[in-house]
Image 1 (cartoon, rainbow, N blue to C red):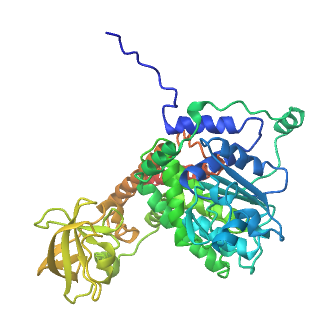
Image 2: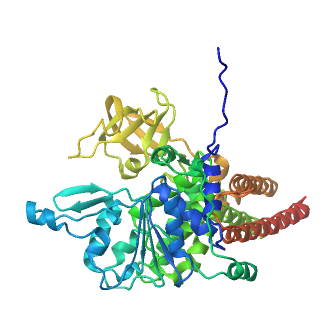
Length: 531
């Protein structure tokens, strides 16, 4: 009986290694464009579109032409737009025979955009309204209306390029919003790379190994598996911070929509981060994936510096606010305090729900509920009053939790869409620090007591206790920050980030380290003086 011989797989062991080898192959003979190539590949896998801003001759079209080569049997379409371009040149000419014989208005799409995997449109803003409107449908829904039939387009990515941004008040906003990733393609900056380029012979790509081609099956696998990627709490906090920062910038800018990010773009950005995490071999989105959005959330070149600053600040906002409060407590500690009735009175409990612990970002935990761990909708609680309302308790098979929701008048509860079973009606109303459910009051679990301590409550304690408490707060704040730095930035090898991207982070980390060092010195001096 013949022995079975194990053969070593010819395919890369992981998606990350696969992408790394593809980027290396696509970058042959090209200088300072590695990140644009890598991000273009990321966009293709995520099914998103990309805009390249830059002067002629900066390898913008090359990115699309090489990207097409990595897809097995991939088809491409590229076109230089002008104000005289017609839909026939983009979507295919009208079939004369079909129009004559069958009285049907259909296009011959073979070799044109509707049948291409990778599309490159140069000078896209010069396209006329008829082309723009059809593009919106193709980009949004990946379908093309060809006469009486609807074609599903195989387009994985549309890369557009121009040396200018879309003109204002010309109806280009909708098309501009469809390009999730926006990158600047400049001329070569390094002298070394520049002279290598001008001295080099014509670019001759080596043959791509059969094992590196992205097949339709592999593409579908990557897309499906990346949708299961979760998100770290640190990224959730950063997203909350950036939304507030961009909203503030937009308000300061007079609501000109230069910092406006639509809900659609946020949803697409989440998919991009999921894909980045998956292709980097992680099961959760971390801050290095989040940082990629600096190439997505600018609408005007003049706004880029503010957007970059907002992103780095959003990452460090939690620790900076914590350190600022600690610094304030240290200064108050060294200031003579007069004992007043207000200081001696214990601070009133916070009843607005802001200090309740959040679970899955949308729920509060009902403590000591007889049915077991039960979660109350955060948004429903905000709308509750002291008047009794109807609610429903059920088991969510997707989240694997018991959930309590209020019933909205006129809106029936859809058990199927909520993945709900074991439905039970309940009566609920708001009470201090929790809710009354079926006549019994229940408290919601609060955040860790240490994090809920305010600078005001610290001042009511004796000096030695205040010092110990401030030291504990400082240690906790620093430990949490260092844990975040270690898991996100130490030996960061996200294959889609450039050295310039990481330089922004390194500057932010340096600033935070300096702030920590300054407060540590202050705290040590206070301890020495008091003890």
